[in-house]
Image 1 (cartoon, helix red, strand yellow):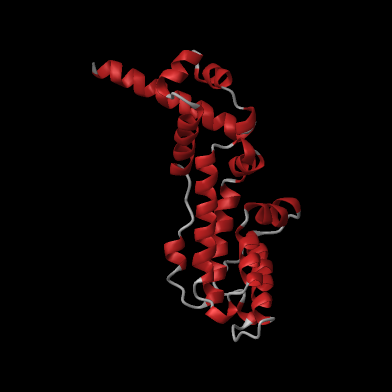
Image 2 (cartoon, rainbow, N blue to C red):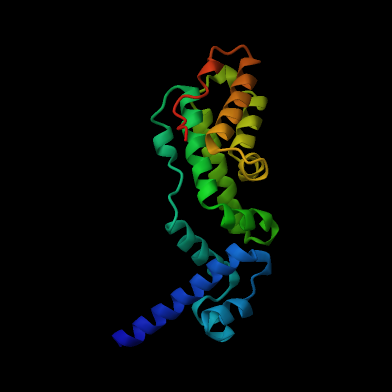
Length: 205
């Protein structure tokens, strides 16, 4: 029984590994059950025995990939009460995650419409939470639509990719640019937050 359980567990993990590999190479939209079965060395029926639908398979794939990443830590960001320090620390952490997971994240976000609705909602909620953590130390008077919009832009994976992948910037340079943009937006609202501190907490290579 123990050997049988190990075989089932091994088959399950091969299927998940195959799905992760295909999601990161061809993207979720072009990943098929037949392709996963072939890569895992099993039949399509075996895939369905382990995962009754594609949403269950996608969830297992996502959980496995995330377990291998160093995830952003918004709780650590919250340890910085100064708005600009929190902004630079938070964006540095987030952009580090984006760079480490660029290959997979590019495929996931490019195939947004092919993702299960549950997963899209989770990603939207996560990004909203990141934004709100960075927004929290700013005064109520400063939390205008322009600040919220620029913060949302700053935490976007596509913003990071445009700056760092398409234009070759380092993470610290991208953080400095976005911090300057966001604090300038606040400054336009006559806030007292000093814009000359945008480099606080950003490691330089």
